[in-house]
Image 1 (cartoon, one colour):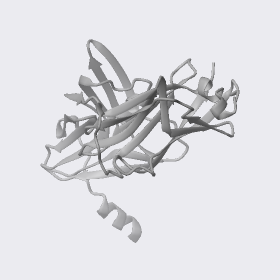
Image 2 (tube, helix red, strand yellow; image 1 turned 180 degrees about the horizontal axis):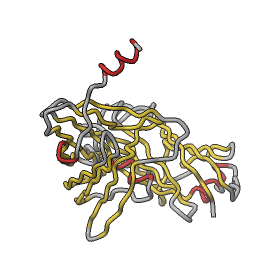
Image 3 (cartoon, helix red, strand yellow; image 1 turned 135 degrees about the vertical axis):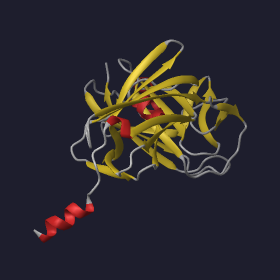
Length: 282
């Protein structure tokens, strides 16, 4: 009984009715910032995120609208194990939660093209009480700028990778997750696009995306915060090249891992990133 009394004393927050909690939103690059304001005279104890290898927000639905085209997605992926994290919001206080929507849109097969989006956010909560909170803002996604940029960054870059649905193409994204500009090595123009820094491991094989060439122009891209440099490559066609020993990839469900290795660079972003993705070749 003594232990039970201690536990109760530690969790003496009160359930929140919908008017007790106000939701507002702002956009910063590709990041949605949600603000939860406690308008009551008591503390509010509520779940805010779920950790499951990656961070998820089970209660959040987002609709992005651009040029009269809307796309709605939920910020949940399948998982086997997870831990729910809670926050305590003092009376009159505000807590903020920042969510980069670029990775979620990409994994939902709707990569964010540059431009301005209207964002409608719905937080559908069931505890401490049932309430549906809504907020609207805008996100302006900057475009990558190709040119002769330079930089010495080693952090704040994310690698996106996916199969373009119902095709043999893969799409790779280099995404700036930070608050300062980055310069990245993005591709090589050699008649067709090459990517000297990219490999994909699939079915026990490593596919490279560089090849013999007589002329080539390296393309760097400057990424403002929230910008992403995308590149599409035909995985099956590249695997069949002599450079990759004319590999024939099987037409079955596979798991692939893309690796971007720029550890040898000195005048652009330097580091190594990896991202896994499901692959089902048509």
